[in-house]
Amino acid sequence: MTAVAPLPQTERTRPSDSEGVYLDHNATTPVDPRVRDAMWPHFLELHGNPSSSHRHGRRAKEALEGARAQVASVLGADADAVHFTASGTEANNAVVAAVTAHHRHTGRLLVNTLEHPSIHAACARAADAGMAVDEVVPNADGVVDAEALLDAVRPDTRLVCLMLANNELGTLQPVAEVAGGCRKLGVPVLCDAVQAVGKIKVNVGELSVDYLSIGGHKCYGPPGVAALWTRPGAVSTPLLVGGSQEAGRRASTENVPAIVGLGAAAELAERELADRHRHMRALRDRFEAGLPRGARVHGGDAERLPNTSHVAFDGAAGHHTMLWLDGHGFAVSTGSACHAGEPQASRALLAMGVDRREALGSLRISFGVTNTEGDVDRFLEVLRGDLPRLPR
Image (cartoon, rainbow, N blue to C red; front, top):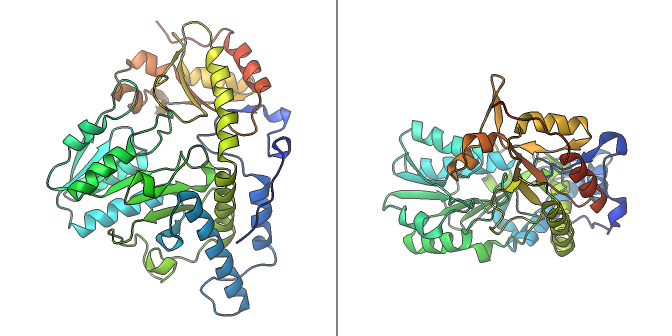
């Protein structure tokens, strides 16, 4: 296991002034320099295939298993229940594919409308092969009602998908309550926790889920690496075949440098969770308290991630405002997607009952550990200017 040394807040990776202020940490986070330092030797002298029996391979295997233990620790899990993937998307796809294949593409999948596209797309593929897919919409606060979701479980429901924290709104979902109810019904639960690790406590025992996915680049680790925890005894069929890596759960030579980075990021997330939560929550609360008149925080009354604020600005055009803010040195995100040059309203917001015009005018602001009160104050000053407006 690679030990990760503490680093003062002021020395952590932060874009230079010429790069502006980064407020899009739910999209991706910068790699913590301590994570980079843990990875670096594995790009240089510590080369080796973990499947090889010679000293180089054994050394790589030791690093791999050390990282597995670090990831397991942040999840309150046993290390042998964790295997590595290339992304949270792959992990989510693997679970849906395994469960549907096990049931020969018969039965139903139950998903929360707020799920990540990797869940919706995987379920759509399963539906093309014969599965039925049921959806439960969130309440107006961006939280799925646990009782309504459990009421939607049928005798032939094969899998329930419920994310821990929504990537757009930051709203926390009632995973433990739903998973507890599903356990009594004998239905497994997949929890996408990619947005949650490093921001809130994530413990697989307390959540009582059967599968849980995390990703490196959302918690100050490298992109291109993720992990899937699987409850012992749960259905587990490899998505990738052709080798015996990861105890037969995912063929492919392991990306040791990236996995070491994920392990280091997981250790830091566990060690620094309370400080991170306090720091980011203070920034978010300062931001929302200073919003200009007419701004509305979606899901603001619900329990949320400490760093996330999803805001509608009255009459503003979200996509154009995002570009306008980029020109002023602030990187944020919009919940809408562009297709053929035309912005489309966020599926999540529409499911909550937000009208299309307001949805198109919404922005997601997600703070990180390197942001400061000064960043918030400068951002608010710019927001009080003349934002781009939607056409009447």
